[in-house]
Image (cartoon, rainbow, N blue to C red; front, side, top):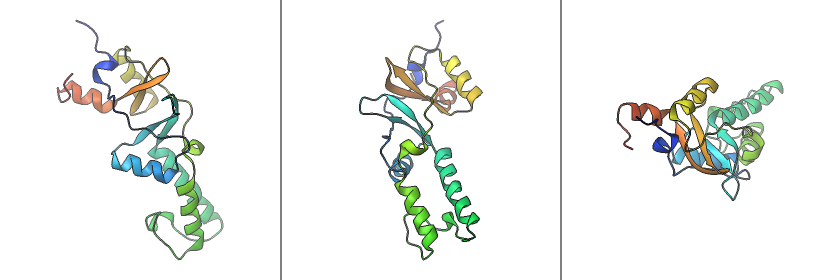
Length: 161
């Protein structure tokens, strides 16, 4: 019996962002497509990094800490970031977060796999490093993504190959 390969389970329609996209643009894209992280690619589909919800939340907490340290008392998540607020410090923080470039907060070193890798090896890597998805590269170009969910759903025949 042949080993299950990454290519058997990977998704080829990958949601990506560019390094020059703003955090706001990236968050909207991630929300619309219901993903928790996205590969950051250049114009030739080379992966430059990964942007995750964790990166975005760390940025928000960094700005919240700044507000706390100056004794402002403003709370960033008391209203949506793109809504108006009377608190000038919060409004400024919201603007700076929203306009921050993806390349400024993405994780640059990325683990990846290849289409011909055994799925069990990709799963071991995801579990060991506590990541939920791996970009799939072929000759340095993004060709797909494989997720923990892909493996779980396949294990009960929810995703047909």
